[in-house]
Length: 369
Ligand code: F6R
Image (cartoon, rainbow, N blue to C red; front, top):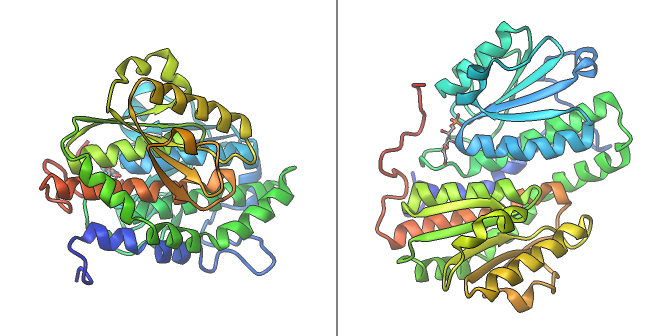
């Protein structure tokens, strides 16, 4: 049942192009517009929404952080993202014009369920993004957009995460389409790019051997840092979470711009620092800033592992290890940038002799608060 792979996690990483394509299937028509019939919240209601709040835990929370960039950019509706376990305890401000999006692979996570119940009690609409048909979270929501990752067996989430991202983009683009924003042209372009993104994920998977080799050389390290900016920041958080869960190593993700506000004190000789570099096209200001971060890190003797778009030459002089990803629209980059980090964590776990599919102390679905 592992389909020839040593671990479910490896199989699930390899299934990502299909999971992504399946999650898009039937949701984009030939003209490039979106049909999300399952989202049974009338367009009239969606046009009135004045606030979006995303609640989730763990990896799903990281998908939510990325959703915020997409939702605010394409819809101009303010969006908050909150850990489900924190949400209801601060008495959040919600009403019937708030749309709450609950993201959960299993559909059974108690923290997320309690958050959505709280939201419904305040009269808000709840849209679930979920991978498990008929599970509790979608049953208790007003509407559900299913991800079609197929069953995820490995405790550490991989393919479910990529499909959560796809679902978040679809919701953001759909809201943009329904409400009609000034980004209509961009939305159409991105929808077209999204339709072919699974091929890009496939290409990343084909080039992962050097990442595995690199991971094996780092098995005796104590700490790995991850840096990113914009949507690369949640990707950095996800890379760090995967490493903690699987390799039992200390890992932290930072917003690269925060480096000078504290974390730079951690940098020393030979510390592996993974940097997710934004595209040099588009928001090139961010690109240039992150290149100077890499220079600063390198100048302190750390080992730089750089994930950058194909054709980005500016990073070459400062990268001890360079991992290439295909060029994508800015907001979609996490779909390709996360994959090397999954492979990296999985390989490091193996090199350290850990049980990849069943990390210690963790359960696949957490049904207690
Ligand atoms: C990380 C991981 C967990 C889950 C979290 C939420 O690899 O698997 O952090 O993402 O427990 O689970 P779901 O999505 O089932 O609500």
